Figure 1 (cartoon, rainbow, N blue to C red):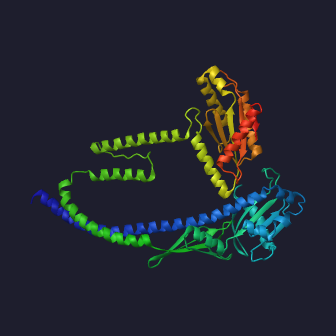
Figure 2: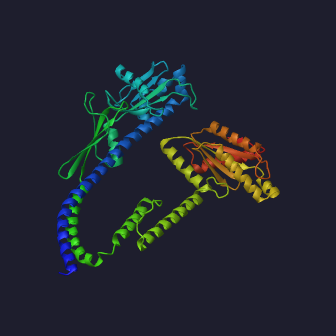
Figure 3: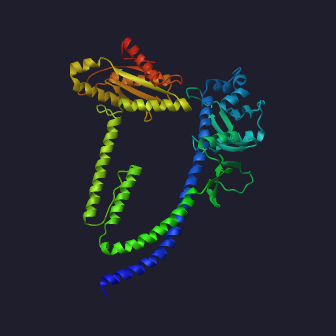
Length: 500
């Protein structure tokens, strides 16, 4: 018998055995894979629900911080503030703030005010003493300075809460006590979350004597065509108090079973067909390296990851193709970094350019309009800069611009933004800075520049500055215009000054 016939018979026997083994393995392996995909989708669903609840808590925390950093609240806690309770601790403010519980505790641990309100035209009620004690103890369970919000189980149900130190409006102290806000995770609020997420889920409480352990492990039960998933959420003390449950159709798993059956049929047919072709191309190892290269290229298109190289341990044309592909990736990655740098950085000064600064400022203002917040901008302009260029030349003028940009950049926080606004103008964006704080930063920068000898020619220059602070009723154009008007006001008053 010829060797090639022996090879064919051997391959037929080998393929027959492989078909039996492969079909059995493929069904079990891919069924488990689709099940994992289904569980990943379920886990993502739970995380989405959990993030929505955390967003509600964050919103409450911002509201609590606004009240705690209010001068009227500080005066109320440190002395006598006539009319504070009558104006602010009434059913209307509970409704307006969408809160159900407010508690003011002074530094000695005494309750200055306590009240809970659940609507239905009822009056503000006092809290049970047992719950007041639990709330007062919350501050002693903080694991870090920023951990001041979460959920707890009260007699009214699951309560989202936040507590903040009571400070003055400018953030200074000493603290006058602690302010606690609570918001009930009611069925109405859950309906709002369901509507926002287009998800149907159930939330139930876990009794205090439950043996459920802490954590949010996902429990999955598969039924005929559906999957029932449940997970727990912990309260501020680390104990499970809330169960989230939802039921979804097993779309991926059902489709996966169908796909596996089709895949097995196709596999049998393909293996038989491959047997015929394999005889002629057995020695040509080509498809696997090319498919690997194609998969890597597709992965780059999906994830935009250009730094991961692909290797092949061989010394043939395919390995040379791999090397060329890796070289191309390196060049594309370098070009991409250059383009990003060109798009966001001023070529002369090395700080952010006008476009990046305006896009960033626009984004922060839109965020503050929705969630609240404050920022200020500083608009600097060099005084008599034309005389610098005329006297010392444009090269010396460029050196002055570069050094002033560095002075501004090193004089602000890492969270702030410095950009060249245009020509000899510079823009600084200060987040969480009111007029007074922004004026201090602007004045500091102005003095440093005034005392500096800039460039190789040791040139002395001064700057004028306009400071404006964002308020909810103004937009980005009005904010910039206000700073620009103040800048020209500073110019009109003799330059080398800051106008707020």
